[in-house]
Length: 219
Image 1: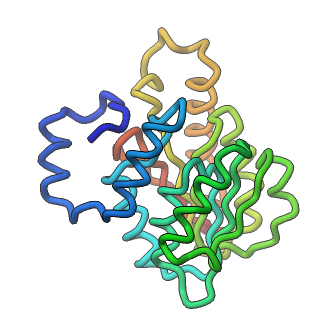
Image 2: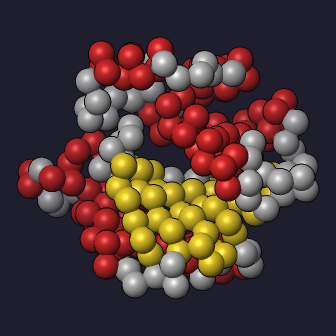
């Protein structure tokens, strides 16, 4: 797999896991390859293992409305959209306007263009104008604002709804003191502690890829 190596899973275990996971679709393979050819930070892309997990979670929940913070080139949005009920919608927010057409083209190829609502700009500016209620939220954006994203998302999530946050282990740096002054590492650590004590959230930190924080709204 040519996505980034978080160092949390040995290459042999990852290879074995991929060999025992349903194969990546031709569309997603092309999306991934084009992302590596045309973008400056292809490591931001959701990989096949995580994408399959997101697709299965969405299929289990059969959400009517999904919110994604951080579209990038559209890989995770396509996976999340597969579980939408008929006429369900997915709001996805991306700060980089240059990526909108890239993702839109693949949404059309996937046949989900009528289910996707693309928002371009700062999520902190856009989120207050999105009403919900959302059954599922996926956060994969700038780590220093994760706590604020959760605060804005939790009030828009249905009771019993779910929030997933990527990179909750941040290359394993959350347990390394040498990175204590790195703003993204500090943001991730602050977010993990915040979620752990949040009165409206039951949570599970999964060591999948670079760490996936799974949260359910219980209040």
